Image (cartoon, rainbow, N blue to C red; front, side, top):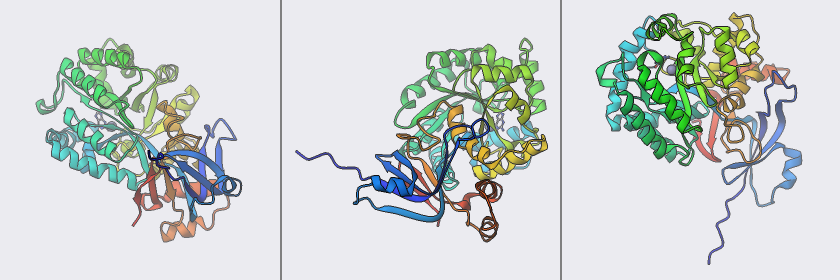
Length: 437
Ligand code: GUN
Ligand code: ZN
């Protein structure tokens, strides 16, 4: 008999940042250890805290990897992104609906080819990891094979990913159209195949109300009730033309959001992209149902969709998370997304502290998805998805961060000036999955 193989403990020493609560509501929420230690065992966090106190708990045989000047933080969680739009990022069009017609639908058509889907999925995941994003809620295309390709690529890297097949049975090109029943049947097959398989999670994904019939939304709501721990993702109230279109297709609904509500699509683990043109009744409904917002500032600015209203969202107690929305979004980097989030909030008269931006990209996002305790911070036994941030990634950043007098100033400089170059390394379930060249 062989003794079970001992999985070695890993220990990482650097400054350490994570959150145990929302820093807007709790002064003790930000956990910062200037000289910190993260101990990982079996792919999970064993302990996180001050080096001086935790070092004593380590077996002498454990080698501590030391990264002076770097910051260990939880991997970023991007709550809304389209992997099939990787190749059309930064495509010019005057607004959402022309952009969908001219670029998005032709790009998504190519995912009928599983080889293409696998090739793009691999590039997409590498790009996320290069930017320090370890979890994302991902739209695939209408083709079930695009979901298989994505989850195969994600599970082979042992990443915690959430994804789903787009449901779309009308108002789109014939080559991307499913049927109400066929789309739901395929979704259920994919749930059984992938949901909770390893680290993979499934999201029921009606693209948006204009491209689903009432029958399809009805069946999507029934599927969501039958599988209550699955996720739901869709778009809402992104663009004024889209809002008018949705209202004209569902005249009985009180509002655009109310269309989804009427079909049972608002609940925990439902993620609504954009949420720009909501009213107060919608906002209250988002909070009451614990549905969450995926805030997509680079996309909203790029497509000219509008500015997210932070003050009203916070007053209503809505659950917020940050998202890139690539390819409508113009960067895979959650640091760049924080940068634009800050400016959008500023245009609405708010000043978002950097601690809040980092919270929204980590624990805030995990909470929005009911994944606290699994990912998003360094609580004991959470999955060890983390990054090494480099405040000196560029000559300018080195110069700026050498002048910072507080943690807030340091994190603010990282959020406003940082990008993929600021990610020195990325780890998923305790394994290094990216190192900056
Ligand atoms: N609304 C419906 N589909 C899409 C999409 O692919 N991107 C964005 N930004 N909005 C949408
Ligand atoms: Zn989107």
